Length: 102
Image (cartoon, rainbow, N blue to C red):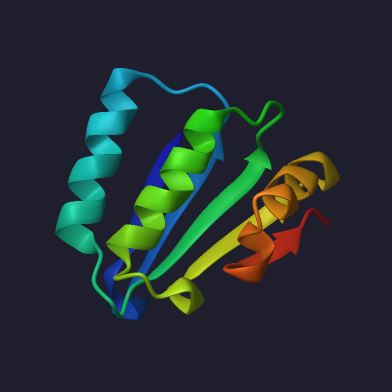
């Protein structure tokens, strides 16, 4: 999983993968605490997700909390139809800006 931060435009981009380890969890927690404010645009890229487990719902909720519960500052991009169906089943499509895979 890749995390990049572009301070000049206040963008935090996270490339999500379906399997992550403890190291990534620590890195993500640290990055969200240090880099995210209510002005940060946080983009979660799901292009590499083949299996959507419940742990990914936790990452989305954590990201939502990190941007100060401002859903307009959280974008889910490159979401497959299968992942979109899961997100719709938990009503995340009503909360977040979700963009399908190209």
